[in-house]
Image (cartoon, rainbow, N blue to C red):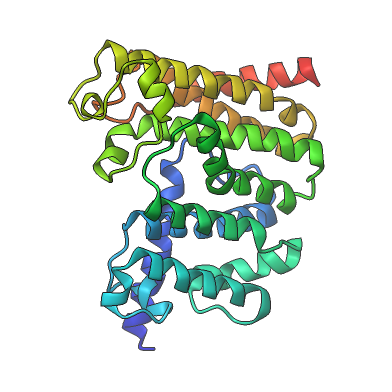
Length: 303
């Protein structure tokens, strides 16, 4: 590989990792031990890259595809891209992966004793995105979140050595809620990709059609639907809050940040009058800080 090509590859990986700043929650904040930060960023790089593949956000002839041995025409097929990425993931556990982000993940996997299952779940969720664009029931959506979001929380607990069955259950509630919040923020963008993550049974209940979701601003029925789904997400975040109180020190602050990020985003959705069609409502830093304090207080009371 030439130096120029290596530079492009490194730039591509840095760009993927740089997206951490745009998330609703802090991915690897400064107050954590350096080893945790490195491990969390390695996992984030994997999760962000697989999402970018599934969303078609990577250039077919770019460095990511080349490292997986994909010709540009093959890389245009998202399922083929995901298959190649999954094959490289297996090399993390039994060989030497090709992609630099996966090579960076291997030390974390070995150090923390991580298993393939959570990573495979994230790939399966993005593979499902290529095949399923609508969800009939809330339970169907929860099953999708079990693949697309819950593995991330389980990996955080595994990295920090705090994974117990009860903590995993609470983590799943928080991660599912964070996924739902992201869906609410991105209704218009998802529809543009022919995906709707609002359960069809709820659209019928609130008399919302797909054409209503395609309008530049939300009408009363859409706002009522979004408010209903936001209440569900908020309830899940509150149900998961005991997880925060079950751990100590800097990990408690990290998990409070995750939970508060979702609550602050819900505050932004509420402040927008539940009109998510004009653009994704984003949490402000003051709102995030207020919610961190509220989560820590609630966790202390419930702990």
